Image (cartoon, rainbow, N blue to C red; front, side):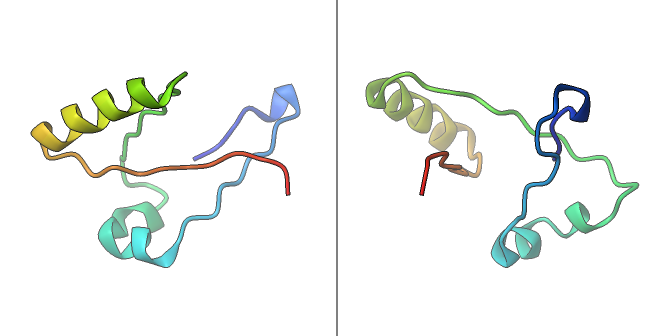
Length: 68
């Protein structure tokens, strides 16, 4: 996963070991692997999206952004 360096954004996201165990193809540079990032503006929207993911059998992955 990466961000645009041209826009001076960080280009590295570190993935937890458990995620790499679930998707070992993420370790291979030449493997094709897709992802979709969605931002929900309210918890109600997020709850609806989780219900849809549950019906489809998708793996929910949550990424938090915030200041420390």
